[in-house]
Length: 199
Image (cartoon, rainbow, N blue to C red):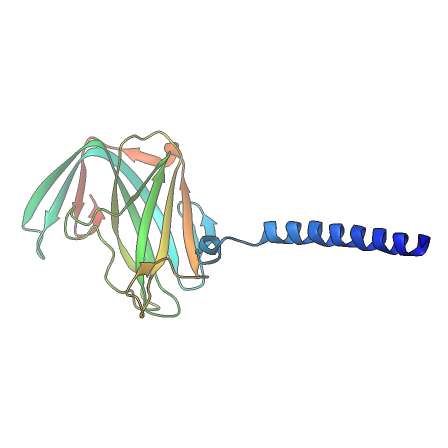
């Protein structure tokens, strides 16, 4: 009888230990959104940052309330854009390494995250599909309400699910992340963008 109660107690303790171990393991499993998100590869301004299918170098970062951008293939017309906040203009070189892909850019400033402004000039957006081995240099324009925080630029491949047509971050691919400290941002009264370059 005493042996049965000891065996029952041992089984109860073993069950409690197994439940505890299961809880610990379960808490370490990533969420679905975490398991499908891009893997960050961090770097700084001026450094070439290389991921699995993406590479990028941020050369300079500018800020202003006013942008003048040439439009048209010959840059024959200049359009002015004003912001109540700040225009953040990132001069960058980027490309894909293994396979053709679209790319998207995000800028986080404080609690605000914003995408590239596609309607600012002709050359302020990423090409539709980047060809592997080619490097593209252009300006990426973002609009943020305030400046002064450490900003973070993220460049990552864009992935389209063929079954659903949904566009999402590519699963298990790289995300280039560049921290932009306030002291490395060149603030100007007006930024002139001409043929993908800041003048």
